[in-house]
Amino acid sequence: MSPDQILSQTKAKFEAGKSHFQEELKKLRTGRAHPSMLDGITAKVYETEMPLNQLATITTPEPQLIQLSPFDPNNLEAIADAIRKDQSMGMNPVDDGRIIRVPVPPLTTERRSAIVKQLGEKVEDCMISMRNARREGLTSLDKAKKDKQISEDEQKRYVKQLDDAMAEIKKDVETLAKGKESELMTV
Image 1 (tube, rainbow, N blue to C red):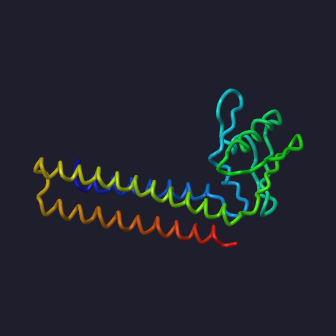
Image 2: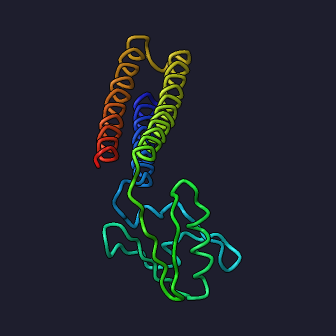
Image 3: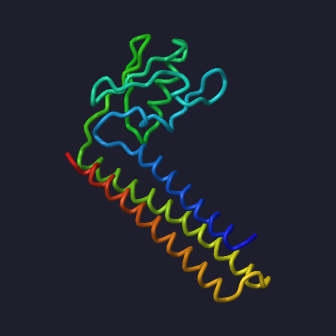
């Protein structure tokens, strides 16, 4: 593999890690209801696990309420149970036989700090994946140098480009995390 391919492949892994981090941020709950809060939840219906957005229409008619209208009323109980079982969300859905309403309780200071702690864990997970991608790229560059595909100067130049890309992505992730943290701590 050429050094340019190694570099572009590693940058693609960095971007994938950043995208995954952005998706994880959507799951962290702020005080306001949003349909994407239920993205990671699946319900067991028709003997398979299915995401809620394939089982119901998810809307937010009020800032503190998520409403689900199941496509098949027989799945009502399974959907409500799936939401109730997800402890990280701490939500208690209520159904009236055809619609599920999920009130989003306001966040307490204690809950806010717990979510900020979760945010820190997600940042660290993202950084670990970035470092792993960087290490793979560096290993590939070392191999290319040993196989005499590139010179030592070229290797150093590619390593610098890799480190610059890593620093830029790290800065982006930290900016996203700071924004989310300020959003969480705003009462």
